Amino acid sequence: MQDGLFVALAEIAGVFVGFGALIAVRSGGASDAQEVAYIRSVLSIGVWVVVASLVPVVLGGYDIGEREVWLVSGLIALVSIVAVWVTNYRTSYVQHVGESLSRASMVLETAGYGLLFFLLLAALIFVVLGLLPDQEPALYLTALVMGLFVSALSLLWLVFAHRSTAATSDGAEAPTE
Image (cartoon, rainbow, N blue to C red; front, side):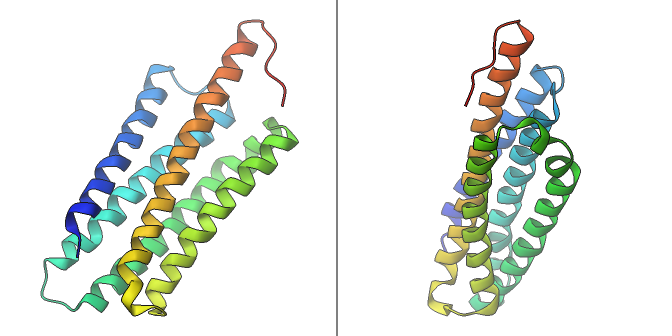
């Protein structure tokens, strides 16, 4: 197993978590529901990547078979990412963000997140079911990288949302999409 690669992914995700937390603290709290949703996404998905990256490293230290390492890691990652997604979706996105996004932004965001989450979930399901036993480490890595992409995309959208919110609060017109 490539422990160093998983630890490196955890470190990268930790940077995203740090940036998200820094933005949340430095801005004195998010100014609207859209920013809260993005901060929540950056932080929760980033933490998920950190934890999911370290699970196979820890399990690999025990005297269990490689299939069991990937099965347990996949189950933990799958259950926890679904819990994160449901929590984020129910607490912020549906309630507030949909109201503040333009139709173009909503379509782009939904397509981006949807594709990445589909790939993430599909990879984890393949790992858990053992459909491609020789590819389990690569599939698990794919899921982690998709999670990292979701966190990065959320951070990018947070920056753009903050910029448009700042423009409207300064009296200037917000950019149109």
